[in-house]
Length: 147
Image (cartoon, rainbow, N blue to C red):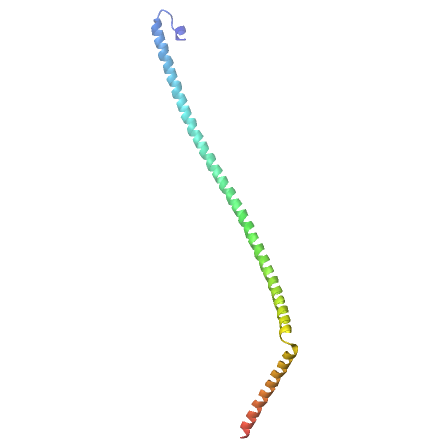
């Protein structure tokens, strides 16, 4: 290649070969240097690009996670409210049924255990005792005033 540019008798074949070899080595070094610089430049640009993409993805994922958390939190709050309402309503219904059942049971137990006549007689005796007590107080006050 260099031999074609330089006249044939000017330099010897060996000199031309040495110059061509040195020239090719120099070209090779410059090409490698340029490729290394280009690789370093592209590597730094790629690193910057990857960091920007990573940062962007991190921000987007953070927003998605926050949105999902907020959505799930709202759903959980609604579920808690619903179950509290159901629990309170069920508890009220259960309480009413329990009071009704106990009242019915106690009435049935009293009817079986204590005869109705005994209850009426006890009531009459209680009333009679109350009347006698009232008379005693009245008579005792009157007799105290007379003496």
